[in-house]
Length: 49
Image: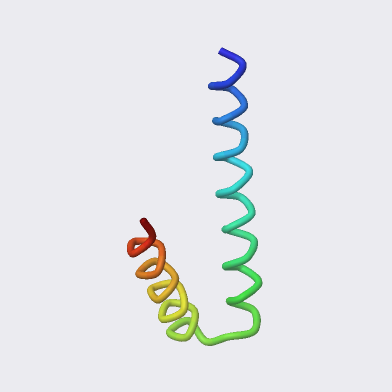
């Protein structure tokens, strides 16, 4: 049960961190630039083995 709770906490923390990063990007870049960068990152993630 401890492992499951730890995993859930880390998942929530990771999502919160990602949201903060996207928010920061949105303050300095245009929406389309952010979307393009995130799409490229998603493609790289999908290609990881």
